[in-house]
Length: 423
Image 1 (cartoon, rainbow, N blue to C red):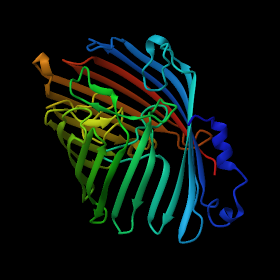
Image 2: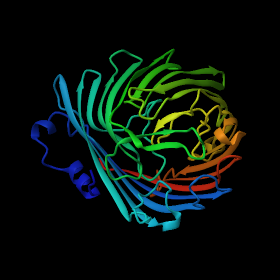
Image 3: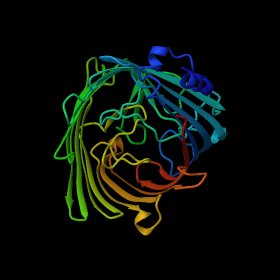
């Protein structure tokens, strides 16, 4: 579905929309934003282990994300149309520094000069229930669209979202394909199984034709408590369930919170990826006071396999970080973290995150020793509060990751974002 950005802008601002739609809220409730994202990514590898012997991944690119959302036509059943246009442009790369996830890589090893895609979504609404056909961006415990590189990942299919009962959100979906974060096309969905952490079972030749999911969240207690249940199935490969609870408790000037989740997964149907067995339990607990938020977390992996997911997606695991996932077979990990909002010191717009995760007890398979790893991340972010650069944000992420069974990593990212509201 490769298209140029100009096409999407023309679509979003076209004047040829039928008058009936214009008179009934299709246009009046429409919004369009253009996000400019400049992304520098550098990852140095040392003590390299595994088949990939690349010592550095370093690229710089510019992204354009146009997001158009229409209103709905009037009547018992309303109709609308959304469009998502994505363009990525290479600023700096070389054949020996590719594979950052920012840019596609050609067969000759060179990164693409530019890439783009366009996704359309037809939507219909009845009461508080919405049915969507086309481009999808799910954000679920069992499947999330990843937006941690230049352009976001998307899926294609049909989804249903219902909010008919106060506090209860139900969703169901059937997805047919996926567009990875540095892809131009709609591709098949592959499975990533963290078994041998050095050479994960990234079974590119094993693909699922459909991903089906069903579940919901129920919030009560003045929205301070949320219960969740979700079930997903990558047909003939694996099925997965998630049970979760989140709770926040105000105590004077403090707010205590807990996020606890449990996953269980097994092979499905024709077992195209073989026998699978995984369970994962995590708990993330926090205490917030003024500009400070302190976290402590635990994550344990059980069963014969590591955590299961589609492709390179992220998951809302308690201890998953941008570099190491801490979800290898039998792994146990702990996290400490501190977030700070400098607005309490008179510096609005400036925030920081410092976190450290330590994992051990990893089953390294035939190598026969206990795997251990740790990662330290520092994030500093600032959003301009006023003036001609108002709402421009810049974020620096520095990560150091060390392991006795996988490659060591030193990483830096600089991301500049500017969202322009077109209408």
